[in-house]
Amino acid sequence: WDMRTRKVAKVLSTPMASTCVSFNQDGLQLFSGGLDNEILVWDIRQGDVQYSLQGHSDSITGISLSPDGSYLLSNSMDQSCRCWAVTPYHNGNRCLKVYTSGASHNYEKNLLRVSWSRDGKYCSSGSADRMVYIWESNSKNLVYRFPGHQGCVNEVVFHPHEDIVASCSNDKTIIIGELTDQDKISQA
Image (cartoon, rainbow, N blue to C red; front, top):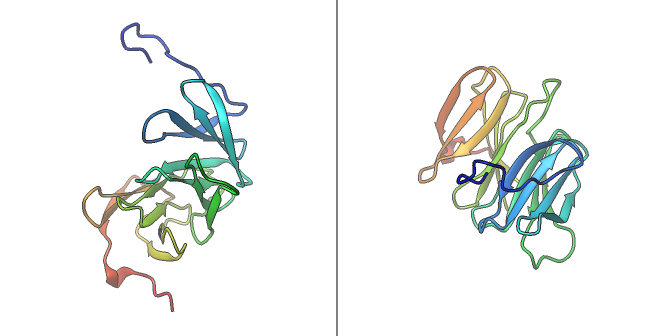
């Protein structure tokens, strides 16, 4: 939007409906995911797609850029979250990790969101099974799984300064909780 003229500044057209978007850190790229199972990486200045991230087999429901701007986390109705390398100099397959434990979708087909902790050490997702899932981003280990909601968990976010998460759900509640070592899932 151009606030001076109160008109649209630029329109980017996608082949299928889009469900999520995220800017990169300098605002020159835009990531979009949608019903076509792929993430498009747009050059904002040119208005065209630079490349696409393919690997999900169902609709993309959420995307989030890592705090350092190097990685993009995505959630899909294919029951997985993926970590993608989005640096311009990356060679090879951009899909670096697939998180398959947790983050399930069901008949409700909600748009489940993903997020990163402030230091990028953890990533999170809501789930249709009413649980909050948090993984250690490098190892892909599921480190926290919190119950409490009575409906689909749509989003989990990390506090910007403390080891606290908040989750929201179809059950019309927001739960705020602390991440402690005693709550971690044993990896034995």
